[in-house]
Image 1 (cartoon, rainbow, N blue to C red):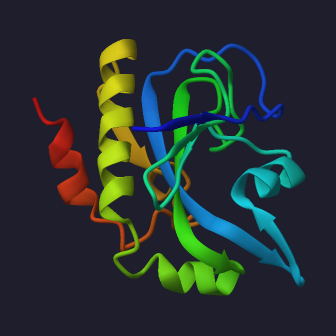
Image 2: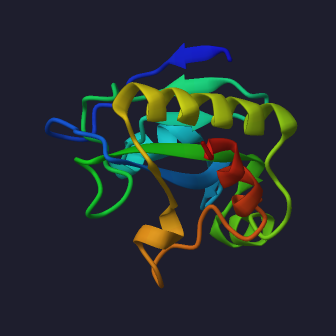
Length: 157
C-alpha cells in the first residue's frame, strides 16, 4: 500500500475513533466546467477525510487519526473517514450513476481492506459503516456498486 501525505486543514478537535465511515467521491470533479482533484474539491468545500483511496490503490492521507475530519455529520469526532475515489471526471449526476456500477478496482479494494484492518487493530474499532448508513435519506455513497457485504467479510474475526 503506497501512502501519499497531503494534509487537509479543515476539520477540528480531537478525534477518538469508534467507527469507520466509508464514502465515495469522484476522482476528479467537474463543477460548471472547472475540474478539481478530489483533494482540491474537499479543500474548496472546506471538508476533509482521513484518507482517500485512488483507483490505482494509492492511499492519500489527509488527516491524522487523532484529528477530527469533516466527512460525516454527527461522526466527525468519533470516526475515521475513508473515500473510495471513483475513476474519471464526474459531475454529481454522472457520479450518482457510476456508483450504481461495480466501480472499485482490485487495487483500491485491497488497499481499502488493508487500511481499515490497520485502523481497526490500532484503535480497537469494531464498527464499519457506509456514509448512507449514518446519513440515511441524505447520502447514498458508497452506492449499490460497492460490494458492501463482501467487503465486510474481510473484517470478520
